[in-house]
Amino acid sequence: MKSNLLFDYTVNKEDKTIHMIREFAAGLQQVWDAWTEAELLDQWWGPHPWRAETKIMDFRTGGYWLYAMVSPEGERHWSKANFISIENNKSFTMKGGFSDENGILNPDFPQNEWKNTFVLKEDRVSVEILLTYNSAEDLETEIKMGFLEGMTVDFEQLDTLLSNLKI
Image (cartoon, rainbow, N blue to C red; front, side, top):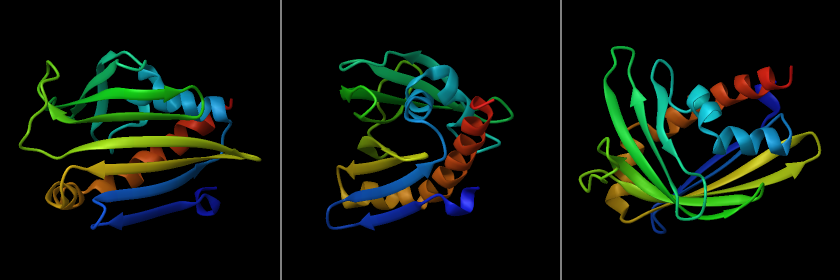
């Protein structure tokens, strides 16, 4: 099933962006919910064996998502994303990065603006993702931290979750 789902990944160092397009074999509402509801996000966000654990999800313009990436040993790395804009079932934009458990962003790590656009295409949904970084250095750091590898695993985990939601 995964082999026929588009996954396009492009880095533009001049524009300080990462652009991804990923298709999912599910309905628009299922895919939207998987990206915007904490109980679903926590099931696929974070490459195995790590997992996401949401502390606060306030999905509205002006709200934020505060979560920890949790290792099998219980180690926690916190992140916060502030929701800038939301167009229900179409797109949302958030900005953030690594933080402490209270949501105070850590300026020593990359921050980015992340825009997701959801497009229904017959029997699948295409999610177009544009990440914009403050600097080329931040972009390079994120790539070296294993961004592509992590997102590849995340998307595979989302495929599994979406196929289970169909039942």
